[in-house]
Image (cartoon, rainbow, N blue to C red):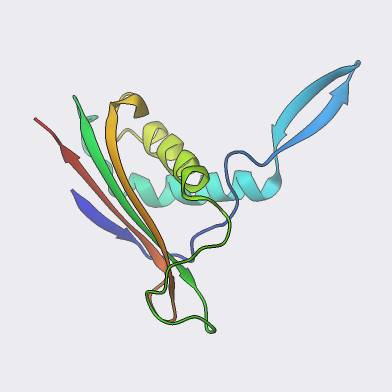
Length: 130
């Protein structure tokens, strides 16, 4: 399965938790930006989720295209966020919307991040190895 999310990709990542101290203990919570990004991903991903979760080993390919007027089209994005941090939020949302039972099923990942002047978005491909 292959599909595009036609959005300006959020740059907030799953690692950007906020901390509050309650009764002397640290409590972690999601920032409003992280909550908004999670809601956006889940709403868009629901339209592409399979009828039943994929089984077995999976290969996930994701191309992140970030909007920029000052970089060349398809130029590599070498600034933050890191690809592994971007992937974590996306894979968590794909799990929650039923693409697979557990993101541990993703045995191979191919990830890229580039600049785009006209076509920001995220292209996602999921292939079963079986």
